Image (cartoon, rainbow, N blue to C red; front, side, top):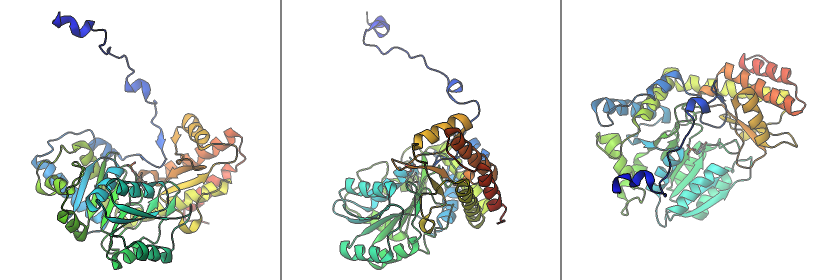
Length: 407
Ligand SMILES: *Cc1c(COP(=O)(O)O)cnc(C)c1O
């Protein structure tokens, strides 16, 4: 009979028996010291528990403050700041898919995994993407970049400020943007890992689109991201004739929510509230102090790791401070190190897409002294446990010297 067919049909999917989160999650949360997501402050966690009307007056006020604070963090006076429901990659795709289309000439400065992702997104929207392939652990010279711009005559140049994958810092960002601008190209910068950890001046450096995620430098939750377009970039978005094939990422539709208090899609309200709190904490600290904290903590960590006897992956000249790459000793894989330190010391660190390194993040809440001592200790003990000869006391002493400003 029809009424009983639901429970008796042989093809029905049976109701599963699963464990509760309490049974799955560790009793004590692991310390998240990898390449993201990173620990979140209590105010961010609290905001993330709240659900409000996505179109009400409270939300309008929250959105207004998020944009104001984001302008400070991006260092831009541009009106065109928007949030994105999605990972940093969704913000990246929002930048690419709104500014590039069939036949657009894109030059991607390719330093590693994430810069290649921008190039791939360009290809997928039909752009004519050329890449300037940079040798691992180095940055392209300005001469090489100028030459590539002359050769390719790009309408858009993409570059990553901090290439999290191989821990390379593109320290020439300002000069690269100037070269692109002089050639009439718009510049898209991936600042997912670096924003609020080191200087980035969108307006002063002439950058046309900056993207970031929540879960790295900003120390918010993953899944809500930010993007800023310059006036020139916004004009290009508005003037395009074929609409963006990505409906959710269409900036002209997102404008409706982020600027006109209207509906595009239901915003991730809790995540936006969390982002609000993360940005508010950045503003309370000020960028100057935040950059100084990141620099001091990261350099002290690097000193500690080196003094212990481990090798840093990237040469000092282009070493990223926001994520530190550490060579894994011969005979071990990154997974050996990551799983041991997690299981035995409750500290999470990252491997890196096939490279022989582990990565320790220095983004947002990761740059706190107690987290550094625990991480350096856990890393050193992991090496000892695995039978690798390291001098852990020397590492801890160097960390302390670095943090206290002594030598
Ligand atoms: C993490 C990261 C991304 C990707 O961010 P998701 O949130 O994982 O999509 C892109 N670029 C850089 C530089 C990153 O560090």
